Image (cartoon, rainbow, N blue to C red; front, side, top):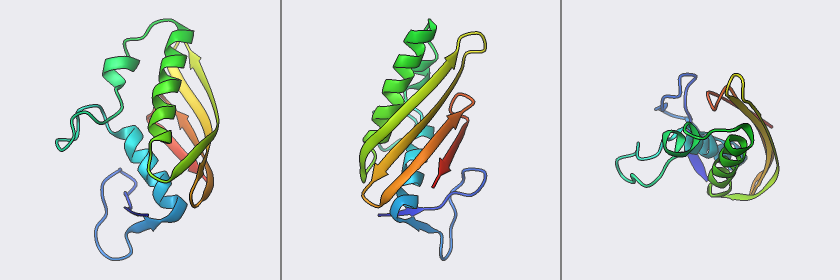
Length: 127
């Protein structure tokens, strides 16, 4: 698997040596899939994270957390070369409506972890 690197602003990089391979490529693919909003990509408007359609409109702490957990875990599991989601833990604070999660992912190239914070605004890969 080969995946183009993104810079610190999330923009595509160009030139030589600007590709990830192996588990770094899978991690980049997951990050890209989680940041793609539903119907945002013109080539496939059925793809993307349904943030506005399913997540932001949910009410009740347990309902919101469970809905978001299901949507995000499915996006991760459906990423190419992800073999299994080893663990997934999340937290939703109903007072601030803040969602965070931690998950461990096994891929065809090895394992890594993801930490999701600030309502998907900060996603960190831990190798």
